[in-house]
Length: 173
Image (cartoon, rainbow, N blue to C red; front, side):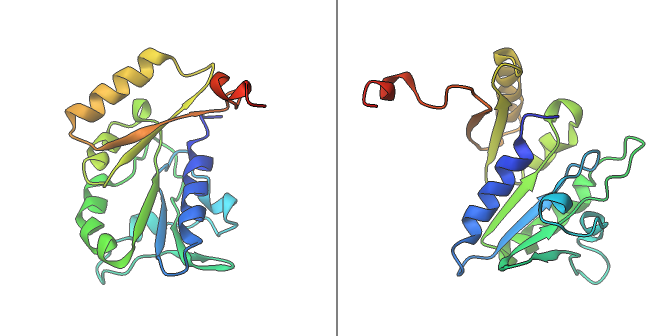
């Protein structure tokens, strides 16, 4: 079990899709452990690898009840197969034209350096860390690597923290 980045990304995409005037694309770039097809009850397909195919079509599913939320799922192939970053980067401009928001659920950077390359082509990156498990040094190293790649860091989410209320606010409740 990871830090909960998939859940955070899915909630972000769902929240963005509440504005019916905005088109949202959610991409599962975690080929080793794809989860979006389960979360959104989609058929586990090979959509991510088909994106930018010969005819320029994207294999994606529309989420039931949310016509403006689309998902490209990963195939989940084993044997160390990684997300085809270079091919995906070539279709990013077309995706930016078609969608108002693109949310990418990526594997941990420590496990897949190609995601660092991908991060340079996204508008921003959110790092998800798990309280009590992710070490501060790991987050600092990751942030250093993102800065070196000139990725735009939007922020860090500390997930699964037991005490959800900041100490400063406790005095009011």
